[in-house]
Length: 161
Image 1 (cartoon, rainbow, N blue to C red):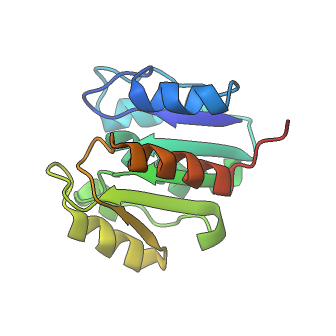
Image 2: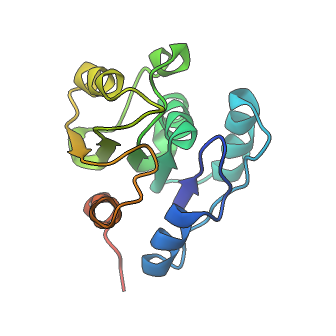
């Protein structure tokens, strides 16, 4: 199963969702609009309960959510793709575990004006994870970033067709 967790000020069916849905028709995207992190964790817990081998793609606040959920319930998840993850706060410090380097990709724009690049680099360093840097801003909306998003997902969630 493949899930997309949207950011704080976006919705479940934005640009990244449509990009991924075009390649992965099985993609699910829960609606977390209007929820704080604790409510999102509760909702994501309910959505993924009793599942195994799940891949989470999280963008911004959704990336923080994906990392926190993995840290809480690692037995459910096979892999993560974190896109400009909002791990620069105390909530990011609460992440205690992440998948092995072969099962996680972290993509971040060097010119991100929302989530500081250096904070995400420190987060990745803490877990021994490579940070994939692109010349883009927080939305990762450039064509090169879009290709890299698809590449990151394909690395950890190979499609069975």
